[in-house]
Length: 451
Image (cartoon, rainbow, N blue to C red):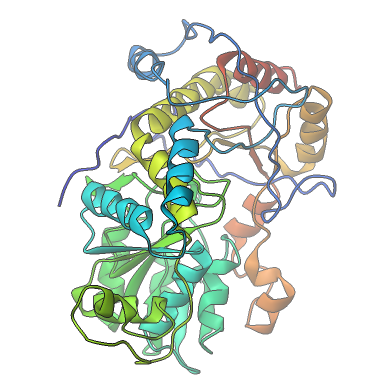
């Protein structure tokens, strides 16, 4: 399996320590929820030199990430936004090329080019672009032929799409808690939840840090379940040297505006188990063998089984190609930003009972986000403090097992205590490839001025 083409290993100073570092999310009514990420533009100013306090390895990562010519930047703004998609100049050129070609419907040449980039970088058997990660997850549910009575184990701390895709098929979601260190699916809790009805286990690689896939794979094998990786956060991350998205029979990717690589709205299904490849193509093309027809394998295409229209416009495919081709620059910049946050906020966190992310030594993270965990009682004031200083920080997921729908599916208070604690504590800081050094310095200063 090909190695991931880029992985900058910048870790928090406390990575691997015995103290748990649990992220959480601000619960202030005025702050965005997980479905409403803010998207104001950052400020392209002259980068500042790396902080002299950063360890040598982190300074080297930062220096290497300075070469970011493909990134276009944004006009100056007063409020530093939580997120902005990377703006790649080549994207405009490729979009124009797609439009001029007259071939802008789904599954066109740019879409296939993006799929080949993913297949080559990751070593997956087949990458199929979809209209969203949500739809890729729905395809996974169709491929497993899920039905009422089946159970799917999911983390309680995740986005609703992770669960909806399987509930749509009539399956019952079984909510598992997350680990205190990485906020990933707790394999010990999963072991207590597995039954003869378990059809799938869905690890979500939170913040782009891998779940404990060896243990989860063993549990799945014992009960005959399938691993479906929700890799919305984890593209180009790795677990023990193996690319995330290639460790389960199926995996899903997100190319939403808030992700490292974006085409606005989009996703992909990664098919690692050969038995699912042909059916995945059929399901994605409205239940027909249209893909085989265009390859000349049949003289006409027709309805084969249940499916839907999950293909992406080639205009979006063109934008995604530009993003993926700039992956070294995008990931390099994100690695440098992450390293600086970790280095310059470590002392403040230790003095204020806050926690930074933990990245285990055997995990190469994807640099999807940088979060803090602050005491729940102080989080509203902390968010207000940042907002008053022009910094838009946000919380994250509301525990799914405590949502109205989650309660209908067996959720109850206290069943996932780590998730419930994390949800009240986690704060995500502005983090995007076009965040310049000056604005990141403003964010750091705003955090450090909170007492």
